[in-house]
Image 1: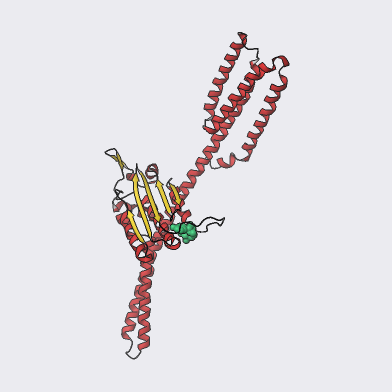
Image 2: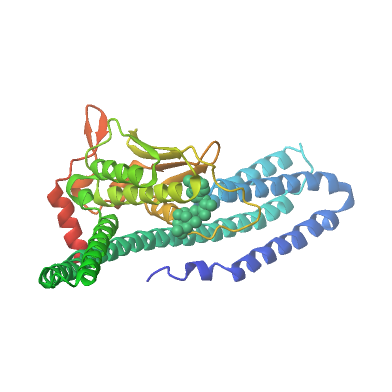
Length: 385
Ligand SMILES: Nc1ncnc2c1ncn2[C@@H]1O[C@H](COP(=O)(O)OP(=O)(O)OP(=O)(O)O)[C@@H](O)[C@H]1O
Ligand SMILES: [Mg+2]
């Protein structure tokens, strides 16, 4: 793959080369300025040479801080060199300055070389970094989609395989129970108890299967799925919940809906496990095309990090999902825990697996298309294939 090893190629050897070049510059320019100029004209010589050094510093600064390309640095350097040469020649020929500008021009020439080399190397570093970031993002996206695929498979297996078998076992137990003679009371009671346990296990499996792959998400979208999840969460954990999603689009690209759902799911699990909260508020909004999700609880907040590393993977998973969508995640912990996630519009357009999912302009406002349940199912089928 082209550029694959760019990061390695621009590693230590180029840094060493840069350090050597800087040393060489100091070794050439300083002695030249300090010792080679004849004593009577030393002051006049040093001023233009110092100006050349100043210009060199500005050029190198521009490549570092303004990210100038090598070509731009070369062009600006060449123009500066010509201007300095012309000014020097004019001043010298008019007798204004008794300075041999050749030293300054030589010094500037060496500086130009450093500036262009710096720009070239930094350009390669930036390109390698950009490529690695893009690769990391692509890997995150792939990881999320494989994870979703695996969850869907597990959910199906639970539902279609284990559930069916356990239901059959329950029916057999019922038949056995019916056929047991009246006098075998203990055995009848035990069979009934086994059926009760089976029914409970089936309920838990159905619950697990739905959590692994919420059926509402594909069919009806994020809001109905979150509403159902919050309701179940409230009943299960006795924590009051609220969902504020005024004006939020009915449907979004499938990858965004899945990410927002999974993030909320993990954040709520954390609330139940760690927060000791009484209330949790989930807010969804679209501002200037960017999607914002906030999850706020009134619990004890995150533990202060006294050097102890957090071992869980939930928050890391949330950060990964956000990163895969080029978004930002902020976690604050004052009077509870507050997660803020922002997914930029550009990421929604770029990462959507559905070309039709790009937002359109209606009355000067960006709106997201309403994807039909069919297109979500279609996408799910594509992932399954
Ligand atoms: N809402 C919250 N309130 C209080 N503490 C929290 C909250 N969310 C996370 N934490 C703290 O942050 C830690 C890291 O959370 P994270 O979700 O990454 O891991 P976990 O929940 O411990 O384990 P895992 O999610 O991998 O099962 C938790 O152990 C907990 O101490
Ligand atoms: Mg967790």
